[in-house]
Length: 114
Image (cartoon, rainbow, N blue to C red):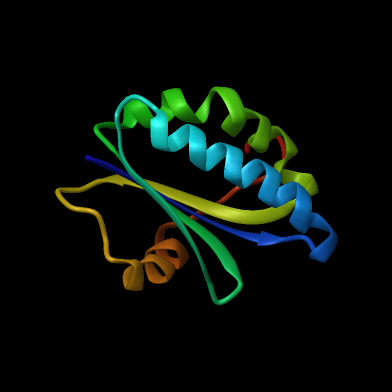
């Protein structure tokens, strides 16, 4: 299976409404996307994390490049900064491991590459 982890820090409190509008729509899209096994989100130490588990990387990329998630990526730099990581695994990590995985493996998203 393919594990995808994101962690986003809002640019400021005024970014929250736009963040939540995109986040809720993207999570709903992920949960019904073909190939999605699970999708969850949590705020840990002020970082908005997502953990999605997919049948394979292709399913995740199909989701990533369409619908509400594509719109969120286009709006990202006006809302937050953050890092993403993805990898193959036999099991999803426990939420207690997510911050460390994100810090160690995360690739910071730069303008034009969200």
